Length: 125
Image 1 (cartoon, rainbow, N blue to C red):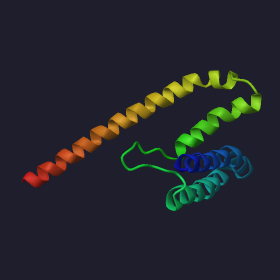
Image 2: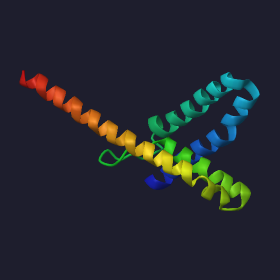
Image 3: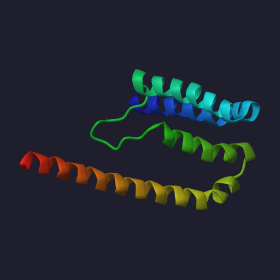
C-alpha cells in the first residue's frame, strides 16, 4: 500500500504542477507563478510529507515530489501527442539533468564528509 500511496501523492503533485502552474503564470505573470508555487507545492508538500502520503524509508534514498513532477512533465507530452517522439526529443535534456543530479549528489556527499571531519576535529580539540 505504501507504494500505491507514493504513486498517488506524486501523481497528483505532477498533474497539478503540469496542468495549473502554467495557467497561473500565463494569466498573472511572475506573481501568478509564485502564487501557483505557494498553493500547489505548499499544499502537496503538506499532504505528501506532513500527512505522509509519500513513503520515504529512513534507510533508503530520499525521493521527493520533484521526481514525480519530472516524470509527469516528461510523459505528459507523450500521452498528449499519442507518440513517443516527444520522449525521444527530450533525451538530451534528460541526460543533462541526470548529470546535474549526479554532480549534486557527489557534491552533497563531499560536503557531508567535510562537515563530519570538522565535527571530529572539534571533538578532538
